[in-house]
Length: 314
Length: 300
Image (cartoon, each protein chain N blue to C red):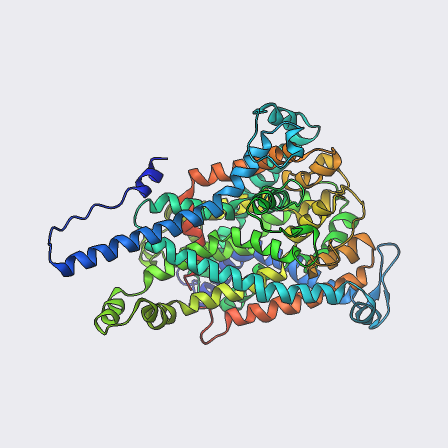
């Protein structure tokens, strides 16, 4: 036995062992990632509506999406708006709440729970709640605003206010960022604050020159993951649009995409709209690939070898 | 609400030094305490009031829900009864529990060995695998939905069921692999070496040594996965929309207001019934949850 136990067979056993442990993911990666991704690329160059076989049609889908599909550019503009405003608001507010919770000395536990809870609210439920809270007819927010003499906007029913309303909803669910920032803030070495204080630094200067440099990787992490989440932003704008428009469909019912006036359209919604409402699988795959490219650019930013935010290796 | 009372009580100042400088410092500290906690209360209101208004509205009568009143004049607890009696609502509950429960078990069982290999084995392609796992984690599910839908619906004829959502979880979930791998990295290799010296195979080591030590990580993954299934809207929308008998709570809830021409009071009661379980689970498993968020966010 020991005689045949050579280095080579030992190495082969190790490889087999690794393969065995990795096998669930290897299958999952092939069947649920690599194969469908390649299919998406293939379909994007074909005419296909689910009936018959896909037929090659070159760049037609691509030119349709970029030149003729009326929802593509509004959705891309909305995405840009959400990246600039919603992500910024979430990061700033998350950092503010994180700072606040580290300063709160009495009842920290209950404050933390209160701040964290909305993050847990299921997206559909939270969106329904906000469509109700902000509805112009009977919503409590507008009732209160009216009482104090502020003319309240139509929120989810007004194209200029629908994205701010979604931002409000996103800022409400800040719990994840609060926890991450809180951990980062507590990690800042105390001595650095003490040294700054001895040098006569004001509170603002201490934040600028001690806190910020220490937590900047986490701020970057929050910004980049926020952008990636925006690429996936689907449930909240869709449900808000559907419920606010009053046309809520079960199976197959059509509704005005991006209600009101395309203002809540995002790229993932276009994949659904093209694929499952107009059955234009080819064009749907084009949008899917645009989405893929955007998501991967920012994922690459996260994994950059030097100064990367997530380390793939040790 | 004793914690809230505590919040309102100013802190006791213990040191007795009574020099003018100490007095100024104490005044400054007290003012800062008041400012911080006032801000805290304001923030808490922002986070909690939406829940409060939703619950209050869920208890209003049909007539009152059409007004701008904030507080019910008569508390209609029967609204909840009515929601639970709505055709379909209980089956949405059952489907959600099947999806979340089965999905969670499959995810943990299939992701743990992968995470273990990625954390503790040395092999070629490990870093590449890790990068692919992260890429899968960041991939919007819509990117591959057309081929996936065709696969499940046309080739396996499983549309109208939750199987297209449950079966893939038996093949490792990228986020769970990532989170577990981060956790397993924190377990010192000495424990594994000791098990090997005792003659344990890798599989036995995983079951006997790793699983007991990784319980907090496993708990966090199970929780996240349960919440994911509970909250998932896109998956059920794609695969079950044609068959209301297979809907989950998150998907069914959206149809609630339109399909039954219900007013806000019943819609909000349904909303509360979808939110409540998640929040209850959180209170029982708070620690595991927060640990999971920190682990995926900060540790590299």
